[in-house]
Length: 581
Image (cartoon, rainbow, N blue to C red; front, side, top):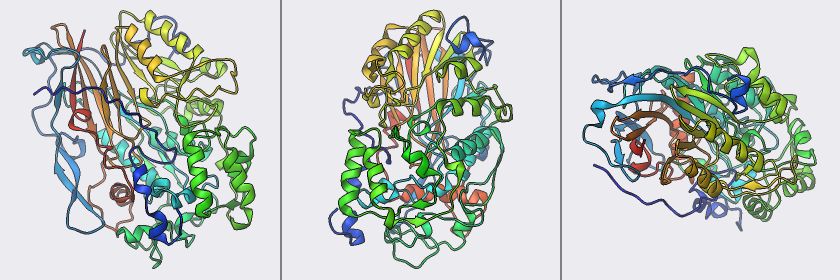
């Protein structure tokens, strides 16, 4: 049955450390803790025709009739669901799947469309992996004293968690709606968390395959918030009654040795394309670090674990508002509180990477994996210092990857005049093809117009301006993005905007997208969410790679203050989105 919904008008003001919708959970943190108050060169440039298509058209393809193997399941089959026992810590189990919802706001659903259908493209979107070096000195975990979601107890497990997602994608060979082969994958940014070189190495190895040791500093032991003895953070191997244990988190002996052990990734078996996010470019995903102080601090031998409530609240508000995008307030705090810091092992791998470093790492032949070389980026991108490009998605289907991070600072996004003009020309050049646009930020989180320090006289453009431009080009079928850590699908008159939840916060999802021509003047854009391959319910004593990935799921579900709205509604999950062709 078709369900009609109107586009939501509220704006998500996502805190740079938190998932959307979690801000209200910060009340009472001080009371709980007793703290007191509070593809070719022409293609990369958007010139000339797209390269050979990634997939052929599939006429009359239908979804497989047989039930998929457990390793290839999607959320149509089952979803990790809490078992309500009354305990503070909710255990997960395999629950019922989510039905597919037909949405006909932009075109009517013809009764014979399935029989005539031709598949145009089929791919997987991964977003907001946030592979995180939890021992990184610049991290601001101490802001949890003012907001519960300022630190996540599951963060140390991001690498095995991401590998389990890769394993799930590798097991899914065909699109669940059309039965056509899934042909490639796209990341939509925040691949790293601290914009550090070690995290970039971990991300590229997770995606292309190999061995990752998710540890920096002391090569033999963990040095971070989870053995610092502060009750603000979950202390898994201590009897301390920390905040998270008061929410039911268990004691897990051996945990800290396990989280820094090597992890093996098979790498994606599919070709994959990369898109950058604000955490891939800015300190803590929000600060431009114009003085260079934070870059020096990142590789140093000091780390701050606690601040006073009087310092945490104002700093969080400044960073959330983006009123000082250069990070001056954080720099001042770090200079002022050096006496409270603890000694850690310095590590040059924690240095931030530049856009040029990001491009060069993708273009390293050792990172090609299943391809393509550069994962969308080319030598022309490297020479020009740009992160936008086009790529082939199938016969007469073109993908456009954008860079929506404002390097002037702040976690909210925008695009410069030059990139917006390039996008306009590119869409016009491919007027006879179907186009899917990819970016990190979504329309409602592109409100940041701080000037880019590298282009101080170039205007920045908002999400509303992006929507207006995309609507002028009737060949745009979808805008696929992430950033807000929630599932949300909006109609924009002539195209659909598809935003997918993150893989670091509950509910830890990725999305299969299939585009088909119904042969009746309409197109169908199918979206199907998938979970990682890790078991829904974990065994606290299983510290194997698979066991850690399962812990990642259950800990994320139980993280204090975790969003309860990130799942979205049924209309934001498994869908068939109708369009006029």
